[in-house]
Image 1: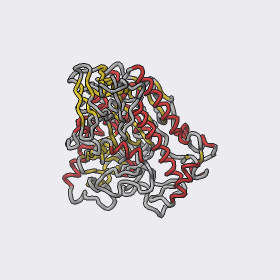
Image 2: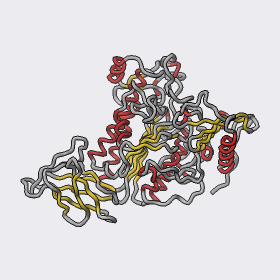
Image 3: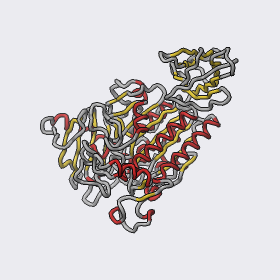
Length: 534
């Protein structure tokens, strides 16, 4: 039997070898695009599914409910060369988490909120982040669990608010002694293989392997990705040049991506579902980029905000890593069975070495920056793409990085871990229904806590309460904001006009801090309450 297959312009699927195509899709999906537009109809070889064409002539496949395994379609029978589409219908999806470092909410070339023209950069070029966003769902109110590195990484790993698992680099929390994403996924299905590449974090205590990962880069931190000390500079960021040139592997973005693609390829061959987390070192200082990309931005001129041309070049190279990953998924035929999530560990920096302070702040229009609980310190890019997620969809529900663990388990077909330490909730249903009104969390709010900076915050619906503490761990002051749709806080405090709402959110916050035995403010710094062993 013979066939002629025309590949769609927008999608190049894997393994067009001797007239065949092989791809994965997720079970119980309807009208899955196969990325091919043959000149004749495709015929299923069995009763494993049905085929139809869309208005553009592209083939859409719906597997029979409950069916998993391989099925084959003969495409355009009666022509000269045999062509077969082999479809691997999988019961468990692959999951990828892309975690960038110090990337602010507006620091990409597509609007994080389609209602706000200022929610993007007109100078930065991130076509692949835009590709990911337009191919799936953007969350306009996506948050990091903390305004700095390691507390966020612990919180994502364990599904906890930072108030529970530690608000600074140093914490008594030992991740391997608690539920983690890899362990929870393997409980959902023993076949999952898990890998972590890139920045693990500072003073995480447990290794990736102790937390359930099958492959990793080990106990990596900021110096691994390029800091003054590892770049030959004695002192801090102000003691060296504003940027460094690396024409081989700037910020290790390329090598991290290569390792992830290699791991995905291995799992494709073995048939295992997988979870891969790519924790990129960019955009953390030091600024490192290639000479070629820097030359492009020098020609482009002055940035639109107070970052530098070299910093913009580093961002484009980060974006290229994202693009390579997405293209590899297509080439491996795994896009139809893989969920990709994208976020950052905290908001953008308030300044960049060499930046022009007379320009708009790097996080404009958000108030504040990294280390702060103002929106600029914790509101971050938050994107999801995968089977069943409508392209160009938008959700305005507040979500945070500590919601990932229960969401991933839900997507993997598991049940919520029995641990009473999980503060996050599954937003799986939101992925398929942008109009969903809530996330299934134990508490109906998001909580943020940094006692050593004497501040805490809670986000509930459109409202956000900021609390400042005194040395005796008492509320010294508070501000109430409406941060949706306008996320700017400066000059918009409504606590005096709406004391009942402020009281309500303050009660939620205090109850959460008590429940998780959060670190308290004291005259001598934070002091962690002793927690009972599990």
